[in-house]
Length: 330
Image (cartoon, rainbow, N blue to C red; front, side):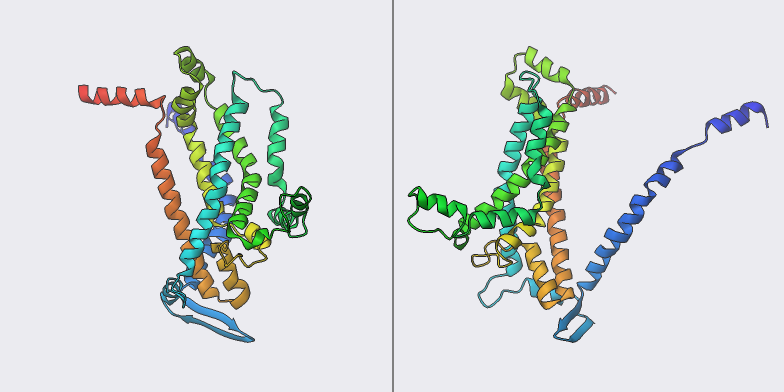
């Protein structure tokens, strides 16, 4: 073998295997603590397995019986899992819509090269601080503030705005509003920081070129900022939606596990927890978990496809046009 061939063989050695070696711990942790529990959950959803006092019933294979039971109307004619799914989505939307609107406006405001806001680090810290508070502690704080003997009722009565103490937890509108407000306060700071990072990653020359061409701030936002920010925005929206579907601790603590009034703030994960903690019916809880997983996957796919189709990269559009033209010329 010649020296040239030896040198060529050495230079063609691939070090890609080390990349797989370094990401191997992630896959091991994922398989052990995420994938295996997911498979076992799906498997257990086809069995009857619960505690009846001190007696353990099952596991007994029942096929799709657990799923049929979930979608069977109760004595009042309502399908509970659909009712609680509607509660969950409504509570998430009430908090998510203002969350993303305010976060997007703040992100554009703080990253504007025209305004050149000083002290961004301070503002980032302030708006992120509510996210550091545990959701259970946040819920206890709001429960104390809005209870019949809480500071809010005392202020309302002392100022003459209310003749007597208002039971905020007796009305579904106020309870849902409090839950949405807490979710908004806890997460809008995190969303703002992520969107700010996305905007700061956009080439400033694009904004300058749009301004030179005569575009005002609104046109720059909708024609340049938003389309280029869309991948980050979709990521934030999908992760927020996943968290919203898994909403548990805020309504659980605020309503003392009851989802009051009349379970209008009872969420899907509270319904799942009810099977785990009360009846210990692991088969039914597994079926509820699978339904939540399916709902999350379907909604995530719809959001991704819809938003990805609505906004295209304005920088990449001329490139696609040139490629199409070259294809026609050939």
